Image (tube, rainbow, N blue to C red; front, side):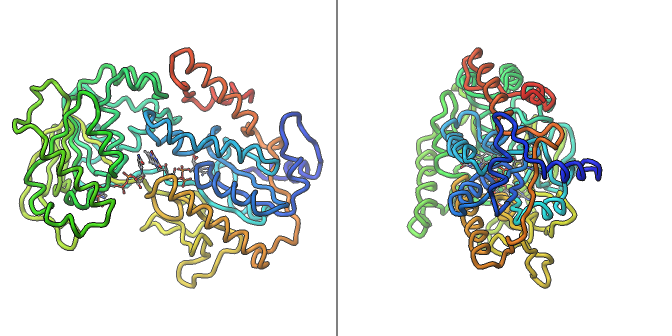
Length: 475
Ligand code: FAD
Ligand code: NAP
């Protein structure tokens, strides 16, 4: 939290209109009559900022972000070999050019500042701090060294500060990924891709070194339900099927009765299922790694039961109303490493937030945060968007639509006077906050990363140490 000393310092200094060269905080800040703080600089935060700045004329939008760098999972989640997805950053950068926009990096809600501080300083606070923890299976031995969360693995190859020391043990032949979402497929692709391809991406150098020594030749993708319920999507599967030097092998038994259901499926599910069946029909009868290719091995109707030293115990399941129901049969799947990929989880970072621990979401109605879940009274001026409000599913486009919709609600609440903006609010001033990263500081980090990347023939080499980032920023 901010100490009372630093808070009073901020209060005092906020009255003083000083403008630092190359930093427009007070410029926009002083003119604005509506001040909105967004917590979290991921897609939800940036898209909401874009909407608010477009639709409210006299508005200042400040984004606070716990890391010194922006973009959330676009930087630290999206796979390095999907650079086209990261193009959304261009839109975010346009928003950042707006005079009414300010970035305050290296400032964490719940640690450096609390929600009450923000309530006093802004007419509205929009929480978009995402989901940066893991869901657990709660099965025996899940905490053993041979089990890693896919979230940590993703953070490791993407260079999230704190994840650089993960050092995954890739000395074995087999990895079993538990879960079949697109995160699981991303992890599988990173494990099976050729190093030459990855070297051209912004995969961190230390991850490339470890992947260069990897002995992994086969990756299982274990789903508790059937092919018709698979959580991965067609683009990601197609990419796996086309991956050079990798053979995808399905278990024919998993597809019993699947063809018969195709006519009744909605179109995206139908196309995905047809692709799986086509790939199954084309696969060699003799399924072995003797082809010299690495293997991608999706298996269905198996739920994780326990983890052993060199295997996972799986319960055979059957489907009832699309749900996986355990049978009394079990199987052992031999594996050297297990990646748990069953979803991300949000946490409550500040006691002032009405948070539903069970669903891992902030209690809200259409983005308006509730004061308490029983009476459903709205916590005036507090909003939520992105994965923190919806739960950890949905692609950037889904997140964008949700963020626009909540931003519109804020606009509506301002124009209907549901949200009181008559009292002037001070906002924050980066100059009075210690080691806060402004947009200009981030641009220095960005430039240095791009330069370091160029020398290595890749788009960027990320700094993975916060102190190093701050040093490059000049802080
Ligand atoms: P986030 O992107 O997580 O942003 C939240 C931000 O809040 C982060 O910057 C975080 O550092 C910050 N924060 C956290 N705590 C605090 C705090 N206490 N104070 C201040 N700031 C805080 N979608 C696609 O369309 N294509 C893809 O290829 C794709 N790949 C993905 C790969 C992975 C591994 C994952 C997990 C998701 C992927 N997605 C993809 C989905 C996409 O990333 C999400 O839809 C989107 O990032 C959600 O946005 P968000 O703003 O809610 O959360
Ligand atoms: P997800 O899509 O929700 O998949 C989670 C997987 O974990 C599902 O297979 C689910 O099975 C399984 N699972 C959950 N609980 C389980 C349990 N207790 N036991 C066994 N299995 C369990 O989540 P995600 O992969 O983390 O992805 C999150 C979001 O980001 C998704 O919307 C995804 O599309 C998006 N994303 C997109 C891309 C891309 O566009 N390339 C890349 C990565 C992520 P059930 O279905 O049976 O619950």
